[in-house]
Image (cartoon, rainbow, N blue to C red):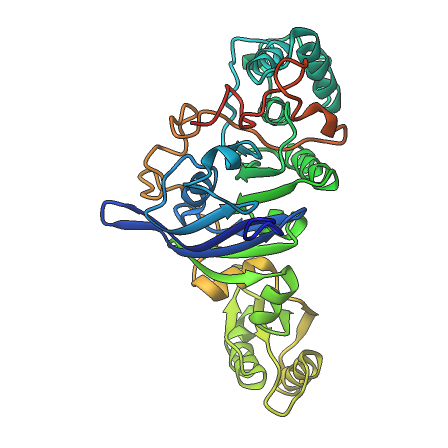
Length: 383
């Protein structure tokens, strides 16, 4: 008989973590379907990393329950660790070793015999476009290359569940796109990915469902479409010809759209979310009526568009502040400094891959030339 929650990769009920007087995670409920990318979206200090560490058995919950593939994270921690990988926000490979040496060393620690370790390292170096740099010390890698070697180390053993804690922090757009391709490839191979991020476009690109977390609580959850629909049927963007007409345009849009109007940094631009009108009128009908009233009042509109709200607008509507912001150096949700690459609560860092994910490379018993049954994590077993 399957354990409870076996059809879900992650299931939590009222999960709590307290640091002193701070409830870093405050009653989080999650249900993450297997075989999907599940996004956890929130600003710095929202509690995302703390929640991930509890799910990965690196922090002990102070309340509630959490199960991974039906296994309780406290009572069945070894079973959980054998099926998960965790990648933190910063590369944790040895910078004095070459890329190849790092992968071979970690493969050996995970139970591969030497020939198998060399073969797996070569596979991953090729998959991540690092063959030419394989014999250079990692300290000479660019930021994007370091992230790729870190991710490659994470999938030396292919896990069932990958925790990616803000995997693209600090990366340039090209490197971010490469990581996104890796995430998609991992899921195509049947793995589940729990992705924490403060980048709205990242959640929009990758996640099939998203939990919005703020101050330790899940404040909204659903598909991208459901979250966007929850704050209005559409988003109206207006660009005027004359900046001095914006106050009157704001008044008219507020009146005819029955919605709060946001003044953009551009002195001639306004944005408003549109819901269903009391008379049943749709977003397009309301927008057309408002545009007509602007014209009647002598306000010249140079550009007008109506579309679905962005995730940025969703987050602002739900929390009254943007998802991204300055780092909180004394983030109470993480007792170790999240900017410290030697974070002792995260000794390892597994994650995802590009295309050549070889599911046969995982879970062969020690002694048969393959990896051990221990947790998939760089530097050995999670503690």
